Length: 229
Ligand code: HPA
Ligand code: MG
Image (cartoon, rainbow, N blue to C red; front, side):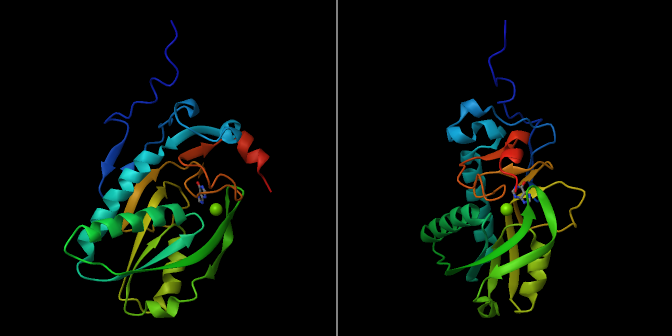
């Protein structure tokens, strides 16, 4: 008798996925993800993906919890949210929405400004040496404000931001990748710590493709070849 497809890998057991408050939800190296045919995906992407690595609903729920933690830590401070485009835009939008809802439903009203910055550091699935910082025209107004940045490649950005003397800077990143080349930088808020796999979807791209995917998925060799530049 054959086992139903995906049965085994679709169970997130306590042994396979752990939560360490500071590292976020730690997804182990042997996490195989979910079969593509158990979730809705645009059919034109199906041949280019290996699996659904983190389903959209799980991302949503984790983001809500991070918003909760940010609200607790904020006190009465007002914030400027600096969204790192393009990969951080979905997480940023959802996080801001959750913070707004929490603020609306509590006694504390948090005023928020949202600004955008763009970093470009990847070609195909390889990190380029030079990181470009584009945009963020209002950075001079960060002086004396609290910032929550959303995204990756943060060390260079943080030293750039330091020039504007912000009162406090906090970094929220949905994903942190376990990788040998990690420079040790750790965000203040982490959604998931993931293995060193190239993931796409939920605004993360491979050469500008896959940003519109709802879930975070692992790209396969076929996809890498098809969208290589
Ligand atoms: N996906 C998309 N962009 C990235 C990744 C990834 O896994 N790692 C660094 N930039
Ligand atoms: Mg990218």
